[in-house]
Image 1 (tube, rainbow, N blue to C red):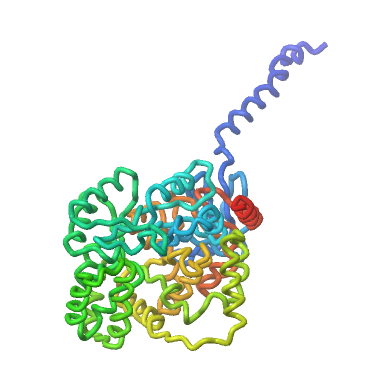
Image 2 (spheres, one colour):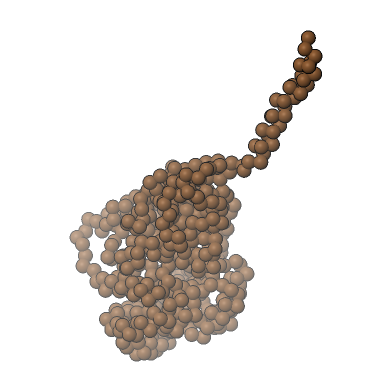
Length: 486
């Protein structure tokens, strides 16, 4: 018997154990296979431009890596992005979640189905909007990120007072009342405030001062008692381009004096009727009396104030939604209770002879948006959803098309729905582009939005707060939302 072999036996027997231990040790040093990779995709955003053949990795609510498509992967899941385009999640920068109860419950799902991963609610009474916000912000909620203002802060007269229209505004008759209202809103957690059209200059000043003290961004309509060039530089965003036309007219001082007299309201009109009477009296007259030099001065004063023109509303007559080939699909995503009245309107409009419509104001909206953009004024993409046939999400894509029609390039239109909203809330370091360390809100498209901005609707998948939703997931989400509405 070979004694040497017998002596070697314990060492030989132990070798497999040692090797197995080494294998376990090496494996434990390897990075864990976590996260999802979208591979070999073209990445497009307004900060970095176009990046071809990239792999984007996200884990939880964070983009963790962006690397060449041929780099080694160690992730739990891969999505083939070959031939596809990845853009940041889109914002609708002007929505009203509680304007119409028929839409409220389904809105988050419909927004996500269109790649809208963040919304800014610009007006709703706190007792209605706060529960909606809390539901959307719940840990397990499939919903866009939401930022909200609470009610429209109106003046002594309130436009949206619940009489013949939804109640989403509150009175601020004095500077003291305004300060108390805003302080209360801050305590209740609003992200910004929204100043409306009937406030006096004194109340406006108190609102701006209080919001600045409380570090709340300010959204606003131009108050009827003020000029855009005066009010605009004091706020962070202005909606609808409304009342700017007066400050671009050759007879601005006379129009302003006329407004101040009529705002004394000797006939005791309601807030809504008083506002409408002034718009009807002066809006088209001011546009007819457009003065380029005066408008240049106004736009110069607004160069740091984001304009949210809501062209899909202002200029709707130039491209009515019921004439679009994707309108029926948009309506199909809504609960029947919300969709049915619009289906009836659609059928009626399609069956009637085309009406002659005065497009002066619609053309003006496109024109002024283009001029503001050329002057360097930041443009934000918002829609006023669900007011006036605004299907949640769908209307944002319509807005992008209108912005391009007004003179923005497709990448600039994308900027208006990604970077500009993030900057408004000082979130540009964590949102607005596809970069490592930023939040995982993204939209995977089947076609290039730089070739045609309408391609933002060619949605293959949506990433919201780090959760991947395939087209099947989105369809199921819509079905569940429609069922819940009954």
